[in-house]
Amino acid sequence: MKHANALNPSSNSSRAAAHRAMAMSALHANSSLSTRLARYNQHMSKARTLENAGGAL
Image 1 (cartoon, rainbow, N blue to C red):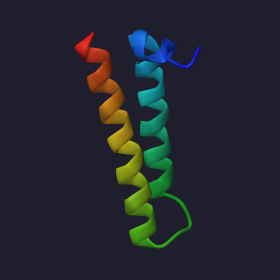
Image 2: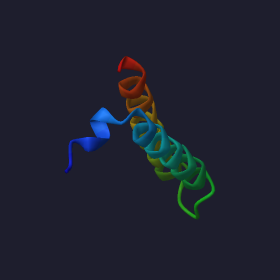
Image 3: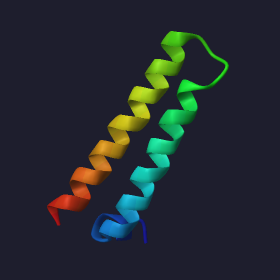
């Protein structure tokens, strides 16, 4: 069931942690600075969204 994650704060928390890890990984990638920063910002935005959704329940 695709919507189960929205009802499970623990799942949102683990997904947020995964996005934070991907954000840090993006900073160390072998890419241009603008690309690394864009990927970092995308992942951190997703992590913040997931954390806020989990806290609202």
